[in-house]
Amino acid sequence: QSGEALEVVFAGELLTAYGDISDGGNGYSLLATGSGIRLTGNNTFSGGLTINAGSYRGFEFDSPAALGSGTVTILNSPY
Image (cartoon, rainbow, N blue to C red):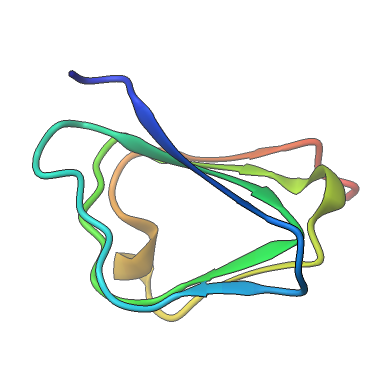
């Protein structure tokens, strides 16, 4: 089902997602909420990435491939 999301919530300093995140061709998005996230790997989720930056301490990615495909949206940015 297209339009569904994997939500990652973490209260520590920085969550590092090692390896690849895939949606199996289903068009799922990734929603990151919490203290911070670091994406690595060749991620193939295709529904986009939403970062709820209201309480974020950091967002890192090792390469453009770590962002998956689709739109990157930052909500509640303090900047």
